[in-house]
Image (cartoon, rainbow, N blue to C red):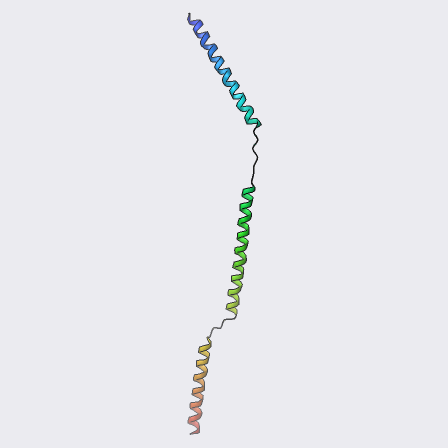
Amino acid sequence: MTKLEILSELLVEELHSFKEEVNRLEKIEKCIKDTSIKADSTQIEKLIEEHLRKLEVNQTAQQRNREEILRMIKHSRTIPNWLIALVLLLFLSQASAVVFLLLR
């Protein structure tokens, strides 16, 4: 065989394999075009809704705690009851001592 025949045979083989690859790529392209991808965000939406619900529950609990603390602060005294009783007792004892000394 001459070189020309060998080259033409190689060229024919290459063209044949190229044609097969093109056909294979066309089939893949057709499959890709037929495939449709749908965006589904339902799971993300459920997670967000659940998170927002938890945030709302936490916010209401914090609001109740804040109101309870403010109520306790409002009804608290700066001077304890035992200190008032002690001062009153000391005042009465001093007054009775003064009266006792004046009457004597």
